Length: 319
Image (tube, rainbow, N blue to C red; front, side, top):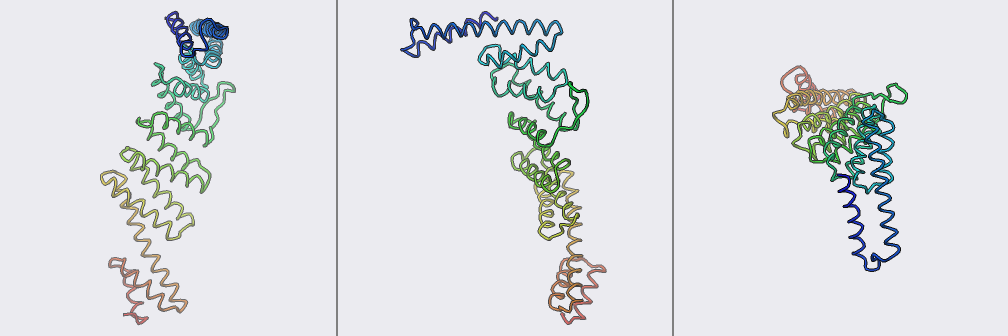
């Protein structure tokens, strides 16, 4: 099999010489180029045989070194793609997940015609989610260390972009949002989480992760409001996010939870209207107080708060 590839490689050099009239077989430059091509391929094939022998003998470090040398020094060799894949497999087996991920990425981006292409994508996905789950072990120092948010989300983004139509893409996008939500820094992390979840619902509206992503948007906004940023705009955004869950994914379990949240927000709106009315009444600003008491009346169902608002409307002469 190797000899066939060798012949094909030499034939390609011969074809190139026919494409350029100035580079005929009698040209010293052409002869030199062909000589270098043969020498380079001979070196690649020799390294490949040595690497295979070392791998079969259990000498993984030696095999890894030779496989890497092949696709770095001889990237156009017929055995370069296979070498990159075998190098990645050795790294993954030894626990060097970050290096293995990058090696698999070389297979995906540089050797898309490789028979290992699909498997390389699968291995990238597995490694990225292992990293996202928390800790990985470094084979060099033997301890566990958390990979930073930027590196983790970058790996997940590659999984998404390398196979944008595969089921792995929307899962990776959801995990990006989840990582930003749980491990991102403060308000910036929350903003990036919302952006990631919105991208998922926009680009993958039919994804099984979409209802949860939309619900997370509302939950984050609601949490921000509870932590002190209780402006009406922020609460309105949370309410709209929950309403989108109900409208877009009516049969999901998240829709049921969203209905409960919108009911709570509605109750909160009524209480806020009443509290504002009380503030203006105590300040002696009757017209403003009447406006918010009427808002309370308009929004509320029969109950104590509605009765109090109605009583103050009567007392302030706002019938």
